[in-house]
Length: 216
Image 1 (cartoon, one colour):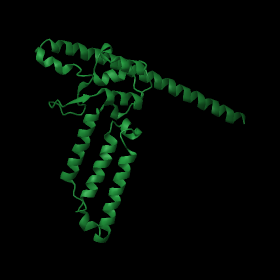
Image 2 (tube, helix red, strand yellow; image 1 turned 90 degrees about the vertical axis):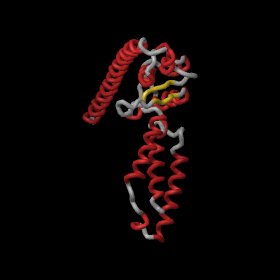
Image 3 (tube, rainbow, N blue to C red; image 1 turned 45 degrees about the vertical axis):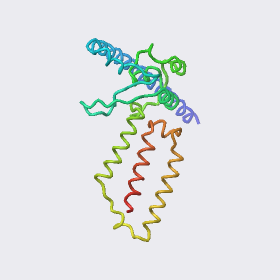
Image 4 (cartoon, rainbow, N blue to C red; image 1 turned 180 degrees about the vertical axis):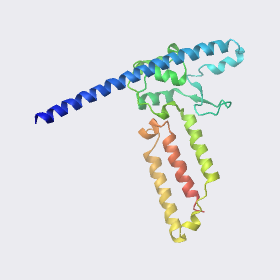
């Protein structure tokens, strides 16, 4: 009995230690992000001195929206995406995103972050970070579409030869039904869509659409 209680106590202490370590890591990470933002702002400030006035508008917010460079763009191809206020609110809601991390993603100074967004979150919050956190919804859409194009261009399953004709219609109808159900289940307000910035549901849809297309 005593050993069991001691084991539970040790486990509780270990869990608390892990939580403290996780919070410390996040604090350090956000501190680094603050420094990176400051460095980028300093560099951008130097660069802006060389940019004609008519071109500076591209670095400002337009109607509460932000223009950001794609995170997956090939060097030398500066693909830009517009991040709207609605998208920012979705990120805050889904990922419990702190102000510091939010500003690092849209690359704005503290004073440039809209008041309504500053009020929603504390400066430091326990953000649910993932590889998707850096993606804008626009870039997620392009990524899913490019994946679909690559599938269609480089993969040929030729279902007409591998699936008997008597079963082909059943298989195709089953995939269509599955696609319809997943579109309803993985809508834009679903956690899967929110946490992957719409990439997850779009990739699922693209793959199923590709499979359906193989039944000619």
